[in-house]
Amino acid sequence: MKSAFKKTLQNVKTALPMIVGILMLISLLGPLFEKYYPRIFTGNYFIDPLIGAVAGSVSFGIPIASYVAGGELLKGGVGILAVTAFIFSWTTVGIPMLPLESAHLGKKFAIARNSINFISAILIAILTTLTMKMIQ
Amino acid sequence: MKFLLAVSALYISVYVADSGFAGSVFADFLKTFRQVFPVFILVFFVMFLSYVFVRPELVKHHLGRDSGLKGWLYATLGSIVISGPPYVLFPLLGELRKHGMKYSLIAVFMNNRNVQPMFLPAMAYYFGWKFSAVFAAYVLAFSLISGSIIGKIMQREE
Image (cartoon, rainbow over all chains, first blue to last red; front, top):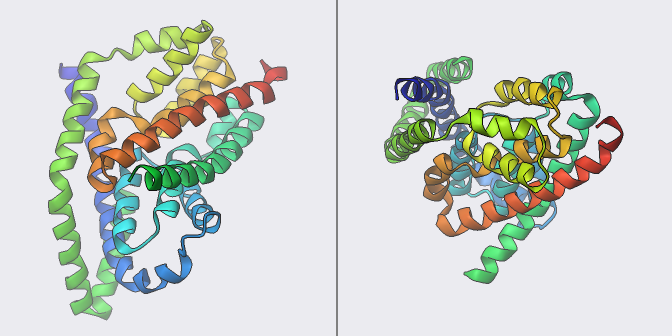
C-alpha cells in the first residue's frame, strides 16, 4: 500500500506540472490562433490527420497530457480528425525519443515502429471519425 | 518542471507587454483547471488502485519468455496496466528483449499505452465515453496489426 502511494505520488509530481503547463500554454496561444483553425482544419480526411500526426509525433509524454491538450484544442475549434491523430501519435510516435529507443531496442526497430505508428495515427483518426459518424 | 517554468516565463513576458491580455488568459487557465481538477483526482485514484492490485512482476515474467498467444495477451494487458514515460519503458523493454521478448510483443506493448484504464476518465471528460470506446478498440486492433508487421520486419534480428 505504501509503495503504491509512493508510485502514485511520483506520477503526480511528474504529470501535474506538465498538465498545468499545457493548460497555461493553450490558454495563452488559443486566442491568438483560434481564428486560423477553420482555415487550417477544413475537415479534409487526409490533411487534417496528417497535421495532427505530425504535431503529436514531435511531442511526447504520458497519455493524459495528450487528452488535455487534444481536448482543449478541440474546444478551440481544431477538428476531431486532427485531434484523434494527435492523441494517438503523442504516445506512440516519438521523434525526440528516437535516439533513446534506438539505443535500447535497435535503430531498425525504432524506425519501423515509429513509421508504422505514424501511418496508423492517420488511419485510426479516419476510422474513428467515420465510425462516430455512423453510430451517432 | 522545466516546461512549466518556460511557460511561466512566457506568461511574464506577455504580462510585461500587455498586462490586460495576460490577466484574461490566466483567468481562462484557472477556470479550465478548476473544471478538470476533479477528473485528475479520479485518474490518480484509479492509478493508485492499479498499483495496489496489479503486480508488474507477474506481467514481466510472462513477457520475458514468449508463450505464443499468451505472450500477445500479456503484452496487451501489460501495456494497459503498466504506466510510465517512454524514457523509463525503453530500458525496461530493452532488458526484456535481452531475456527473449519478441520485437512484435515490444511493439504491442508500446502501442497500447493509449488505452490505460486509469486515464480513461480524462479521455471521456474531453471526448465522451462513446468516442473513448471506439478509439480504444481501434488502438487495440492496430497494435496487433503493427506488432505482426514489425515481427515480420525484424525476423532476421530475432
